[in-house]
Length: 401
Ligand code: FDA
Image (cartoon, rainbow, N blue to C red; front, side, top):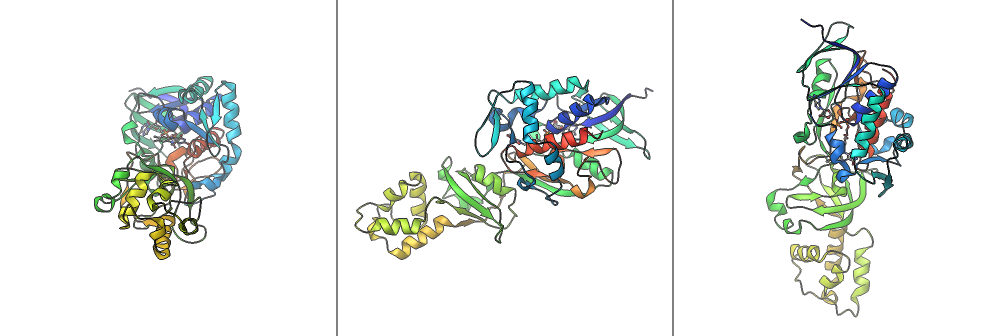
């Protein structure tokens, strides 16, 4: 029986973090193999950012990440910054632009990012095993890892797990990385979908489902206390609930059974604006509100509050105006759930950071075993932060191998 192919480093998962790590380690002279069960390379990069990949965020700090240990990601993020990634893109003349709040996208296509990573891996003479399933991993004492795979045995002195999160299982996402962590005695923070639409039961939502497609600027919050997470972004009504950047952001913080709080008119104090307009006004309330909001939303809202569509602003008692304004500024809703991994952008939770060294991503209890990228309990906000974590954790690990 063959002893299998021998490498210094085997990396499971040829996505964002895995390719970055392979390129760095390979260019440092390590003999690296990248293993992925998908036949197509880096599908998540390909579909990200609507096909243009929001590959980083200029404002990245550890504060845009959620984790049981909020400071774990700090060291890797400081060591490999958005500017470092931009320097890599400059080497390949990849054109990019800033869209919104520091979010950087490719001008042409997310394929540019895949091309850069693949080219960097080629420079590091990385070996590829695409369409390859790992059936079993063994290690005796502190010896090499032995991987039984669908393409034969692979032996490696070091093993890096870069299998990502469980979002979009139809693209090959799996919980394999967390299984490997458990196999080697490492703790895992319970995973769940994040950056995901929120859903409501059919009865609560019947009234609002007609608003599917309506979008508006909001401030959304959840939790309690002065430091409760809050986002100032767009909201989108859907047939089953709420989506859009505001909801995706808050979904990562939302705890089942608790409300989300929406300010649907953050730009002004609605109560004083309406009371001011009231005197001498001949306008209908609907017309006044439609100057600030999509008309469909106003119609639905008035109906929901039992206010006739032809009500004139002048006929609205101040008390009723106050009630209406209070509800619009602080609409509290308890979602029944999320749209799940099929619609989520990322997974929250994963390999417990307490098990890993923050500078190298090595497991403290199991030398030569590493975890990088989304499989680790480090979840970024929407806006390019998750890729920046993938690059930074990949580099931190690659420089150690
Ligand atoms: P990634 O998912 O990139 O790679 C993991 C690899 O492991 C995959 O190639 C997979 O096939 C492989 N794998 C899994 N299980 C395996 C197994 N059992 N055996 C072998 N291989 C296995 N982020 C951002 O910053 N900006 C953005 O614009 C977007 N946009 C976006 C859109 C959509 C629709 C989604 C779903 C996600 C995003 N993201 C994003 C999130 C971003 O894609 C994600 O955080 C990174 O790709 C994570 O990088 P990783 O390398 O950790 O995992």
